[in-house]
Image 1 (tube, rainbow, N blue to C red):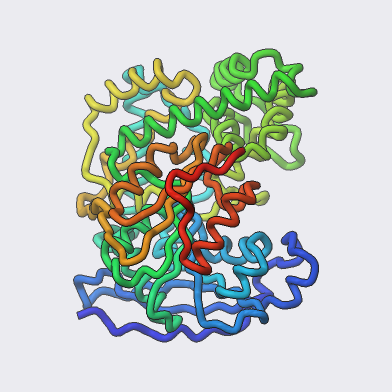
Image 2: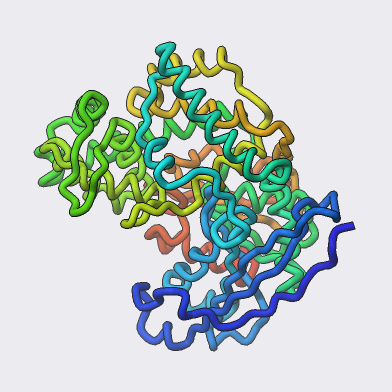
Amino acid sequence: MPSPPQQARFTDCSSLFDLSSLPFPPGRAERLSVSCARINVPSDYQNASGKPIALELVKVHDSKNTTSNALVVNPGGPGGSGVELAVGLAAQVSDRLLAHFDLLGFDPRGVGLSSPVSCISDGEKDKLNSANPDVLTAPGLAEAKRLALDVAAKCNAKYGSSLADFNTVQTAKDIDRIREAVGNDQLNYLGFSYGTELGSVYAHLFPNRVKVAVLDGAVDPLSDDITSFANQLKGFEGAFDQFRDDCLKRSPCNSLGDPRQVVYDLVKRANQSPIKSSESGESRTATGSIVLTGVLSALYSQAEWPALGQALIDAKGADAKGLFRLADRYNQRGPGGHYSNISDANTTINCNDAKPGPSDATIKTTAVTWAKAYPMFGLWAAPSLFSCQVWQPRRTPVPLPSAPTPKQVLVIGNLHDPATPYQGAKDLTKAMGNARLLTWDGEGHTSYLQGSSCVDNYVEEYLIAGTVPPPGKTCPR
């Protein structure tokens, strides 16, 4: 039997965070306290003999809050830090929400401060992120497979059979231990992007323990992995077209001419002769893969469009500094060249959640289709299909999240979300069994706290009072 649940013992840890850099509303920072705790959970809930996994928790408390309610938050990824998210949200959510909930973040197993998975070095990540094999050629196909095999082999060699324990089903069970550890009878949850999958799996496993759950930017539970990937590519192609239309109307971005053609030309040029950066101390040069990573990074938020326009102007003038800044933000590479472990955790969790495959033949066929259908990102993305093909074999596929919870779950879908296309929100709402869909006619990834007071008010009214929006509600842009 698994070990009994622990009680979380929080101690002040505010000195670990640069709270002064956050845009708190006047008077809020003085009311907040930040405390941390660690709890141990089973590495495998079916096997009591395994070494436990330590989870890092952070709690942000407003002195105006006299309740014991905790709102568990997850930023997605998989691989994103819930510890960082909780602290960041403390500057963004309303006073009303903070007066009702402590924000409770946790780094999921294998992520950040919670027994992190780390398979390859920073230098190896630099090389991997710069690689741009063309899988439509025999040498490119072989290189893509070799790169994926190298990562998988190093992960397997370092972690052995325990590598399989880092998966979404186990993490959902961890959330129930966290709920118990902070003394809540039911779970209050806010999950973004992959956090919707994690939250829906929790609801599937423990439907009667869900009090309120907001699932924002839904991962589509009804699509297979390749279809979901293709839907994302379609979303980012569309998001780039929206950027292009905006760019053509604004100075200095409109000096580029056609931004799409500029990116095509930069990728071709960078693959032949990588572009240098004027950033002080930067020794890397940007390949076509860095160009596309930088572009993709900026498409997650409309607020990044000006930075993307300037980065393309600079790169057209033979300076990759802006593209490196965008790409490094996406890859979580710090100024000193050190990466977070988000890519290690992302690959590990995604592959452990996936069924074995796909075959070489499927990858070749898919690459041909993607190169034509998604001319900016399709061919660049195709090597990623090898990542899970060569992964360790003990998989834990994510169950279909049918979850007739006693109270309705709130699913939010952004009509123009490139990373989690809107159809996923419709499908998740249907699959859950007792959920309400709130739609936003917005831009970028996810909806809550992205500039819509309509969305924000509905979310917070639901979290605090349990009141769902009217059926079919769409918040305007």
